Length: 353
Ligand SMILES: NC(=O)c1ccc[n+]([C@@H]2O[C@H](COP(=O)([O-])OP(=O)(O)OC[C@H]3O[C@@H](n4cnc5c(N)ncnc54)[C@H](O)[C@@H]3O)[C@@H](O)[C@H]2O)c1
Image (tube, protein in one colour):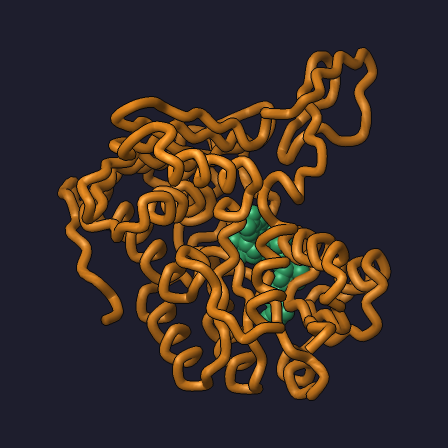
C-alpha cells in the first residue's frame, strides 16, 4: 500500500498533533475526522484540509477506504472507540493512556489479537530524536550499565475539561504526564516494572493548586524494574513557565541528562512578547527558550512515521509502542494510585503471557 488513509477521532489538541505529524508523511493522508463538538470539528477539518467530517464515529468506521483510526478522544472513550475501529477492520493508533482501567486495557489487547489488526500505543517520548540518540549512546556502552533513571513531565495544568475530571480521565498528573516517563524507563532498559511505591496529592480540595481538578495535581513514584534498575518518576501540574520534560540516566560509567522541552538552541529576550514559545508557557515576554519544531523534537513526527511504516509493511510496532506496552504502563500508573492510597508498596504481575 503506497498511501495509508487515516480517520481521526477528536478535533482538539491531540488531534492537531496527529494531523500535523501525518501531514509531514508522504505515505499518509487524513481523509476524515469525527468529533461531538461541531464548531471544533469544522475548525479542525478546515485547518488540515480534511475532506469529510462526522459526528458519529461508527459511520466513519463503516468507510471501506479508511485503513487506520487515530484515537484522540478523552481517555474513558479509548476502549469503546478502539474496539469499534478494530472490529470494523481498521488498524488503530491510540493516544495515552491506553485506557482508564486495566480491564479496559486488557479487553483492547484481546480485541486487537482477535481481529488481527494493529493496536499501536502512541507514546511519543520513545521517538523523540534526543531520546533515540541517547538510546544509541547507551547501546554503544557510553555510560556502562544503567542503574537509575530520574524522569518527569510537568506543566501548569491541562487545557482539557475531560482531563480535569477524574471519571473521564482516570486520575490526574500521573496518568496524564507521569505516564510518559514511566513508559520511557521501562522501554529504555527493556524490563518490566515489578514494584511501585507512590505518593500523590488527594485531588479537589486536597490538591496543592488545582482545587477544581478531581485527580491529583502532584504525583511521584519510586519503581523497581525486573532487572534491578530503579527509577524515580514524577508528573505534576504545579510547574509554571512551560512544559518541563527532564530525564537523568545514571550508569556504572557515566550519566546522561536530557532536557526535552527547554533544550532549544534559541534564547530570546522580548519586551513585548510574540505568539508562542513552548507548550504551556504562560508568557513570551522577557527571556524565553522558544521551541524549534516542537512536534519533531517531542517525537510525534517519527512516531507517526513508524506506525505508518508498520501498516504499510505489515510489521509490529517496536517494544514500548505495542498495545501490550500501553497496558503494562497503565498497570504501573494505577499501582501508583493504589500505593498512594494504601501507603504500601505494590508488586506487579505480568498481564499477558
Ligand atoms: N501524547 C501526548 O503528548 C498527548 C497530549 C495531549 C493529549 N493526549 C491524549 O489525547 C487524548 C485527547 O486529548 P486532548 O488534549 O486532545 O483532549 P481535548 O479535550 O482537548 O479534546 C477531546 C476531543 O475529543 C472529542 N470527543 C469527545 N467525545 C467524543 C466522542 N464521543 N466522539 C468523537 N469525539 C469526541 C471532543 O469533541 C474533542 O475534540 C487524551 O487521551 C489525552 O491523554 C496526548
